[in-house]
Amino acid sequence: MAKQFLSGNEAFAYGVRLARPQVISAYPITPQTIVVEKLSEFVEDGSLNAEFIHVESEHSALSCAMGASSVGARAFTATSSQGLLYMAECLPYAAGGRFPIVMMNANRSTALPWNIYGDQRDSISQLDSGWIQAYACNAQEALDLALMSFYIAEHKDVSTPFMANLDGFVLTHTYEVVDVPTAEQADAFLPKYQTENKMDLQKPRNLAFSAGPDTNTYFKYREHLGILNASKIIDEAEERFAKIFGRRYTGLTESYRTEDADYILFTLGSLSGLVREVVDELRKEGSRVGLLRLRYLRPFPNEEIAATVKNAKAVAVLEKDISFGNEGTVYTNVNSALQKAKLRIPSSDYIGGLGGRNISKEEIKIIFDELEQQQSTVKFLGIGGETNGN
Amino acid sequence: MKPYLRDFVPTSYDDIPEATAYEAGYLVTKNAGWRNVRPVIDAQKCVGCLNCYLYCPDGVIFREGSKVGIDYDFCKGCGICSKICKLQAIKMEAEK
Image (cartoon, rainbow over all chains, first blue to last red; front, side, top):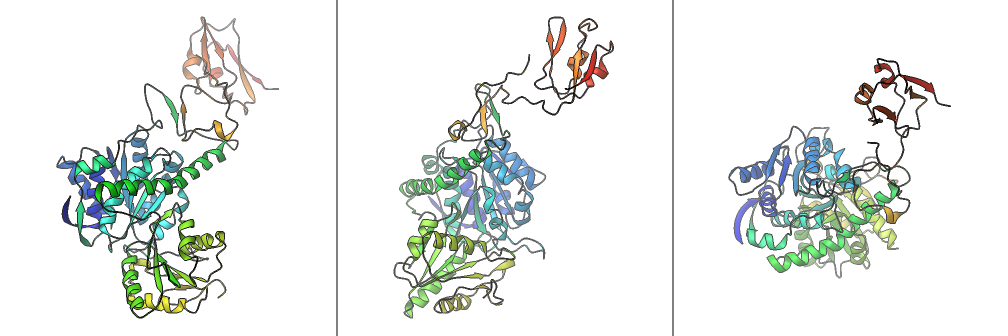
């Protein structure tokens, strides 16, 4: 391993290089551009032996990656925001075709109003597309996710495309010291991609076909089981990763000081670093508060959430997302997990950070203060405006 | 060569492959249900020039000795073969 000073985007690109993808097809978009630039440099200087395809759009980027995957190649693409929405037609296509493509998405707001800064409305709007969705909290995790994502996506029990999300600018453009593993370590971790789901002259197969009303549900059920299986394979990948690289991750969620916590805040991505600091400060003042970071939104950590909050008095979700006309989608998912586990505890939703708006320590402290009132509310952080009949 | 129709028809969950990928070279269902006129070849007039065989957009005309035959399991009844036949050996007849 070698320590290097890298941005989130660069760290992810280093991780992708270690995974040795055979085809990279991508279109640059702020704030993802540096990943594409870096990988094209790696191909240019010969340190990555991959076919780098300059496509004319994001729709083509993912279509191209599907073509590569359908001949059994390891394929990578990256996008953000409007680009993700433009390729949206191809997302369920790749998932339904069971093509284990890895894509990095730099989380960015969606127009209008036009905005290039970070929020998570782009990826969260695509939760139903059949992709695994992970959210990194720092550059090291970004690099490690890049490597692990291929292992998880390509595992024969999963065969599901993987979207690794990095907060736009806050994570993609900030620099940290990152441990970059050696190629030998990476090769020991990540086996070659092998599949029957490919064009093969020796064993010709009909790919990406139609399935009518009689059999369609069966295919969709198999797809659902594949992404559910990812929970188990994520654990397996992290165990294997820890043995080789010495860094351990914690599955679908990461809990911080939740064991005896009365009030637990859920969030995802890089924001969890700030919430951690607030938890420490409030703990010093004697408040029993904790943080649950959702590392994955698909598969959704239903059981992990229920196990973590079963003794809490109230929980809240802080998310950079709003499903207009209802509430934040992470909140909807969390409430469903609580309901299925028969946990009747107050839960609130705080929608913040839209279009890159800063979230302050003070605002997070206010959330914890309000949690003590044990209400269920939906609020726009720092603005108010409750919804849903409260 | 006429397309080969696979005998096996998936009916249960266990019959379904993991991905949308399955052994190639077969068709799984007949596909001619919406045809309302069918081409009928007059074998006396046909000289086996194979123009219809070349022009058929669905590849359902096949060679049969020195003449041609039509695979009615897949013919959509578009009538191009009838139009293209210089000897007017193919007539379109209403499906009953």
